[in-house]
Length: 293
Image (cartoon, rainbow, N blue to C red; front, top):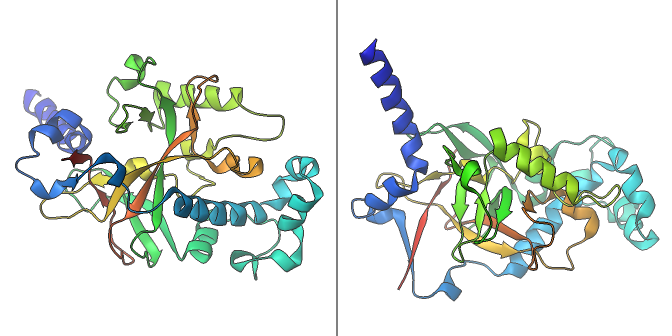
């Protein structure tokens, strides 16, 4: 019995250690390829925020067009000029051509809009649990590949109970934390904060990443595993603050929400950007640590 228990604990640890920050830190010296080095904080980004915004807007608009049947209340409150952009046949773009009106298929929409799609599958790393793979299409270097969903905590906000046995807490360079756990108390907190910030029919954040049917197919970044000496990183994390001008009707696809409603700063998101061209079938691997010289 004791051996069985120890074997189960060992297997659990082998899976959990890839997301356990102290273990990763202690093994940095043994895994030089897992460290991304930059000369200064301002250079810790591959692409500009404008490029990230362009990708998100392009995909989110396509997702909204493919979900017209479920967006009646939202469209009724939009200005006529904005409503026409989504409903007029003349503005129909790639993913709508040949698609039945009102059918909402986010993975196909993503493939036809940005040229690739990603999905969660068992990781190719032993004992690493779930990973994220490019299942179809081709990812060019510099593309926004995924988003890290979750509740945003400023450096001074409490996260003790949510962080217990939670391998999905991501720490930004400025000490902002993102809790990307889709289970337990983290799930309850996110749902509560998302419902709190709703403006009538307008949802200001996406809650579907907590379920199996994600409306924003990018929102799986918390399942991207750390790279190793054998598997070099092909994506890196990049902080992205949502601009105030981001369209209200498209915020429903943002998979992040502030813990406090009165946070006096732009909504923080973290995206994963391709470090190189990525082919279909490849698993995504990231650098959990960035060293600034």
